Image (tube, rainbow, N blue to C red; front, side, top):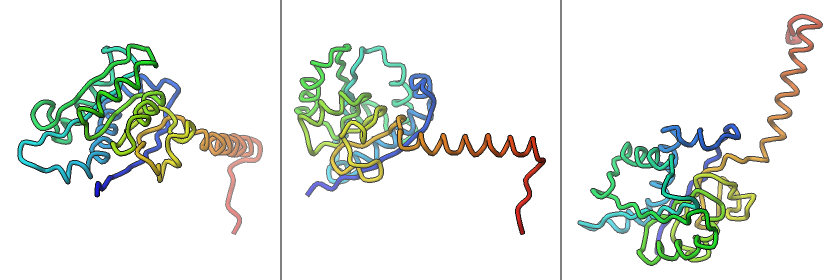
Length: 195
């Protein structure tokens, strides 16, 4: 009876994912994905006084620089922490063995969606729930076997990826074509289309 909304987004960026994700636009994108992931449960749970609850599962410590971007993105969408949305934070402190227990805590609360920053966190959450949407903020959901495809994840894991090996070949092809066009134009002059 639960109707779920799923969204898969593919984002391309440099290898410096941390600095890209600290950008407020990335926080807004993640907030939007979280909102879409919650939309089915929230629509069914529109009861007076019912506050939506987001579980945030971090692999690292409490010092998460991109957390402010996520909170700002949620505010931009009209969600204010402790006013109309509850954020439940769990930190593994760099210990992957803690992830499953922390994910289980979030499921017992219960939360409407689980946001995680790593493949490991998503895998731990997937061990304890097949119904609560899990949103990854980084990682490779398809490559790690957590989602069937980005367009149609298939299960309850969705989110963002900055690791698109499928596009590497296309990027290389475009780079080769660009270099070839530059070399030809330097040797032979500008290219003119054949009529």
